Length: 163
Length: 122
Image (tube, rainbow over all chains, first blue to last red; front, side, top):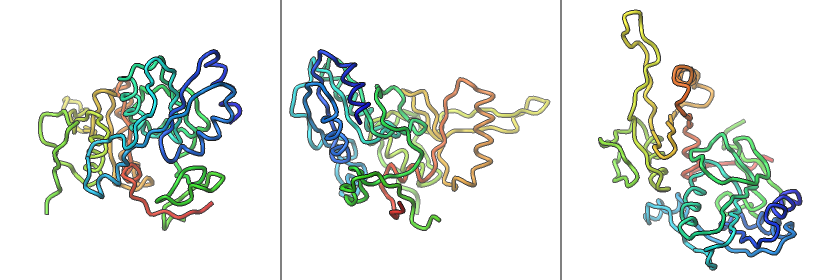
């Protein structure tokens, strides 16, 4: 975390970036990252409607923001803070949405990365904590049906029935 | 009972897709949900011809994402049982080195759709 903070601070020296985290999985990561970033910066949050929840409740069949940014990001340096970048579909949507608001710059910092699963490649993923194998995680903000988020460390999950 | 055929918004092909299985349908729904333009089986790649030039092996990837210039093949087989499909993909990559293609397993789609039954193991 300190390494990420130092790297971002060096790259954004003299600027005041906005860290934008998506609720809820990124909360723990952004909390630690913000405190490890020796640079004046702002914090903001968005929340996206989850794919599964939308279909189960018969709601909208297109991704949308349940909670939008509080701040105007026009002319600001925006750093999207994500728990994991996988297919890149969610980041693709967020980047597309934010670019319409004319930020000065847009980059992604992710705790975990699975680049080999990417469907959308043209993403500004600039800072990566760890490139991880194709496993599912809980803890440190990652959940399973809203459980285990508060575990202090990351734990690997496996499918029921797997040995 | 036939497979459902929802109205897709990000589908940019000519003909109504006729999916082979539920994993393909789920993948189409996910792409549509995220607004990523997609086509279904738009191109067949010749993998092998006999001496007379007749096609003896070909491969038609399930999806094409034009904005990403990427083909996506979905398999419902277990990861350990995809040797034949992997061999086809390898042939395709050898014969068409400029073509980008990714193999997605059923469980990848299930993950995207957040439909898991998982145990905490470590």
